Amino acid sequence: MESLLARLEGALFSNDACYHAYHVLDAYIIGFSLWQAGHSLPAEEQAAVAERLAQEMSFDEFPRLLKHRDHFTEGPHQGGALVRGAAPGAGGALDGTR
Image 1 (tube, rainbow, N blue to C red):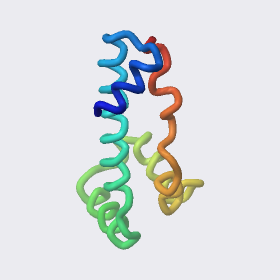
Image 2: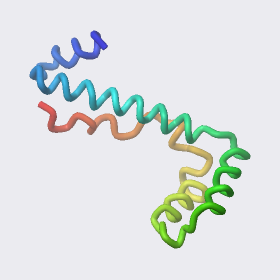
Image 3: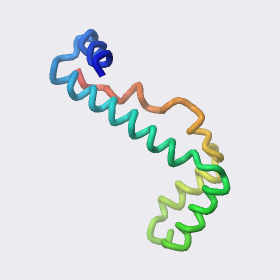
Image 4: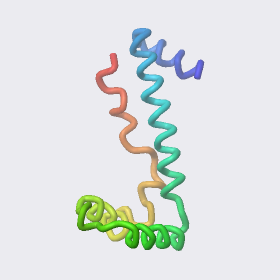
């Protein structure tokens, strides 16, 4: 934490911007870590979760969620391709914080 705050201060962020930037980065790192943990299930566990969700909810009420699911299961991110890469979007997370 000290090192990150020192880097932000060294980049000439104001005290207020350092405070906010630290918390943006902290939330981004923790949030992505939690997301990755939840999306790193083995294929058979992913299938079981999908089956349980299909039984417990109607995708008729959530058409965008259905489209998102299909993109993940049948599209370019099939098998968690995004999970194996670096965290996307980090470069823009602090835009406008100075």
